Image 1 (cartoon, rainbow, N blue to C red):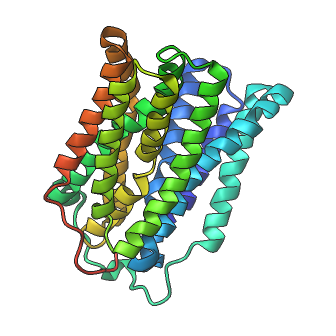
Image 2: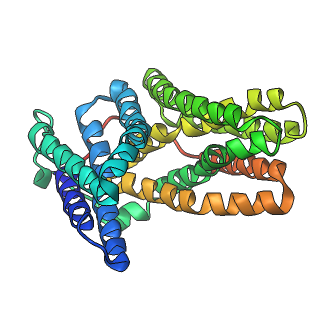
Image 3: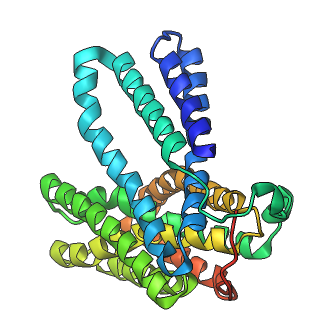
Amino acid sequence: MGDASGLLGAAVALGVLALLDHPVAAGVMLVVAGACGASVNAASGRAVLTWFPVTGRGTAMAIRQTAVPVGAAVAAVALPPIAHAGGVPAVFAALALTCLAAAAAVAVFIREPPGAPARSARPAARAREVLADRRLQQLSLAGLLLVVPQFLGSVFLVEVLHSGAGLSLAVAGALLGLTQVLGAIGRLANGAWSDRARSRLGPLRIVAVAVAVGFALAAALRPGPAVLLAAVLVPAAALAISWNGLVFTAAGELAPAGRAATAMAMSNTANYVSAAVTPAVGGLVADLAGWSAMLVMGAVAAVGAVLALRHLKDPSSEPLRG
């Protein structure tokens, strides 16, 4: 019920926010809404782990991960007309109703899989034991580092291609859209690949190496022809979007019994920290040393992720994770 309670809390906070005028109170409600809604990530990931066998889990988690950018795209299309018709309070009210509907759907449809042991019967490690697990620390570090090229590609691709290579804004924007579509397709493909290989970490290492090579090559080509730069940078940036489901699934599978949600939350937190810092650092590097240096930063981070993963192994069995 973690999904339902978190979504219900987010719905209440957003509903209150729609009625507020004071900026400080509104900021507090935004923090509350974000904190409550964040529970959806780990809880929904745990649901995938418990419902799907190892041979289908990667694909299922990839679909779950792809839902995030799809939801963002829906919001981008739907919310501006709502704001135009009813103002910002109407946007928050619409988001509150959406969270409320999602909470009701979770409460009605999400159940423990048939034959699953009761939660009380599962020996659960303490949360601090999960945080101290070296394997999960390595995986979280790899995810944190892979977020660097992911966000550099997503946030700065238009600027690199427009101001750095001379493409028009319209073409650069269209290429950013193409990158996001390819990244979503890549998430699904990587999930299916990991199921066939019965490994999350093997495909993850290959993707990380490909991202490192792609960003390094784009850095070398950046002064060159814009078309050639785009032909390298767009696939590299798409690959940098495609790995999230592999890390998320691996975190749950590596977790101690009864702590899959905690492990996935640990991994997600590392990703969010990197996502918060990367655009500012990337912009500073680009301002001080140029776009090529910023692209090298993405390549170096991906190499760091490969090194962080080098001694990690996939679980040899398929325990029931909780």
